[in-house]
Structures are given as C-alpha cells and as structure tokens.
Length: 191
Image (cartoon, rainbow, N blue to C red; front, side, top):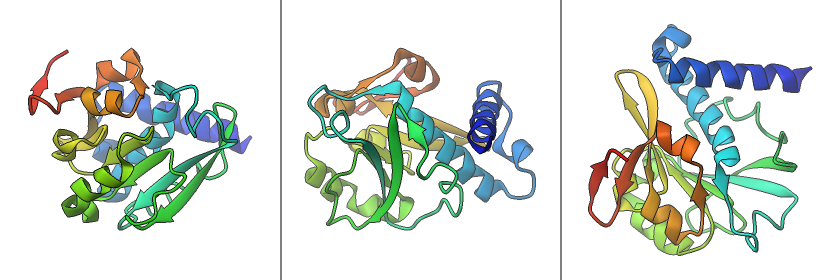
C-alpha cells in the first residue's frame, strides 16, 4: 500500500509540473521544502528515462546508488525513495564526499559544490554516471542534468553532449520536457 501511495504522489507531482502549476501552489507555505520534494521525485523518475550501457555498473548491480555530494538540501524528501525498487533494482541513497565517488550510478551535486564542479567531473571522467546538479550553469560545465527554478517551477536542463560522453541515452520523452544545452556551443537550443 505504501509503495502505491508513493507512486501516486510521484505521478501527481509530475502531472502538476507538466500542466504548469507552481511549486508554491502544490506546497503552500513551504516552498523550499516543496522544491526539494519535487526535485527528489524527479531524481527518482530520471532512472526510468535513462539507458545505461549494457556493460555498465548500473546494468550489472542489484542496486542503484544515488550519491549526494555536498550539503543535503533534501531533508526527508529522499527518504520515501530509499530502498524502493526501480527497474528491478533497490535504490540506495548514499552521502559522499567529492573524494569518494566509487560505485555511484547517479551523482547529485548540491549547490554547495558548484565551485568544485570541474574537479568532480574530472573524477567521474567518461564513466557511465548520471550527473545531476542543483545549479543552472552546471549543464554548460558538463553536468548531464541541471535543475532550474523558473517562476517558482522546477525545470531541468539536459546536456546531451555530456550524456553521450558518459555513454548514457536520455529518453526522448524526458528531452521534450527539458531545456537542451550543448556544452560544445555553450548555448541553449530548442530541439
């Protein structure tokens, strides 16, 4: 029953986002907390819209390791997803330092790490890690998905070049909702 209610809540949040409701109208009075509940739901759902290479750590592990680097802005928002099964694998939330990125399938860089983005990306290299950040400019720096808050709505940008370098394929369904950023040009496109 708990799993069904989490699924329902996730669908409702995404539906509200797609139909243009603002984060503040969903979570009146607790905008910042609501923002991170929405971001947590997005992180959880990104898993279903990304294809990892056949020989990747993701494909060959019974777990999906979501690693959080820096300050943890989510509060309890990610707790609902801890140990949930996604694509037949258990989701594990890990809090790591920038010096310990081993075993991460998804790497979330909080805003507190924005000055270390280049260093973290060098550490990740061309490995098949889905990098996600809390700062808009990080997509242009090589992060694959960056959250953006526009007019109190949570959106995201996708750097397709960075995804290709990591060997990840992003679903067209997800790309339709994203702002597309080309790292090579340093410009947004409307694809």
